[in-house]
Length: 289
Image (tube, rainbow, N blue to C red; front, side, top):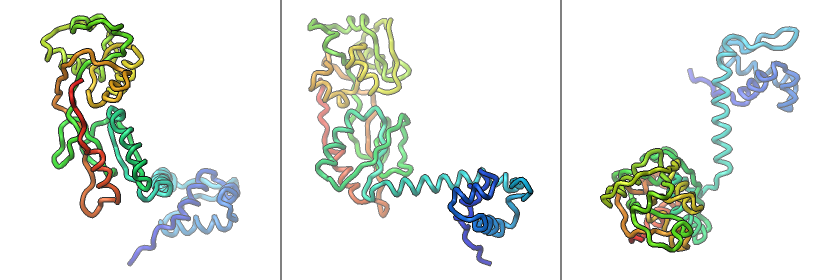
């Protein structure tokens, strides 16, 4: 026997009634008569095959099975409501792009220019601290770390120290002089700084340290004159050009990590995705500072 579809309006009526445990208040919120609400509840009970409420003189009380079902229906209904609201607000041509927050300095100017040149294209950007190499429910994603198979290489990570010009005060700087500054770390450990120092064959005491959750935050702190950080030369290119930062040394070290772009393929490819991919994959100048 073919089962009848779940009566969603009746589910909604049940959720409201379960919150109030009073038909009059539920009817007021639903803008229905008490009789109409009762019929919806009865329809859902018939569909389920068991009672949801015990009726008594002072109002309603959830049955044991009704109380067990309530949180599951609340969660499912909220998921449907959230999904449909998001779909309603999102333009049909919106591309869903996920990117790590550390790449925002490079990415945001490119997205602004892209939407200026393609007014009919909209990118819905989601930032994350996690580095995932799967699309999940996104159309494209920027991945940091190992380059995934089939992805588009955006640029390789190359680190060099950067700082606000005011800290240098127009004097020459040696690697040994760095010990007198506060070291700004783009992560919870010191591996990025140690990698650069090892490439210079230098060991330095790090007396003052500040740790940040992302490279972008460490770069922002360096711009404010908080100390000196190691940063990817591609990510700080505009800051160097605008002299918000200076790079006192010419050496940059490759970490082995890359920034890559993965995107949806095949029949699921949305309109304008190829435009986004081509735009982000334009060659990036990685010349040393």
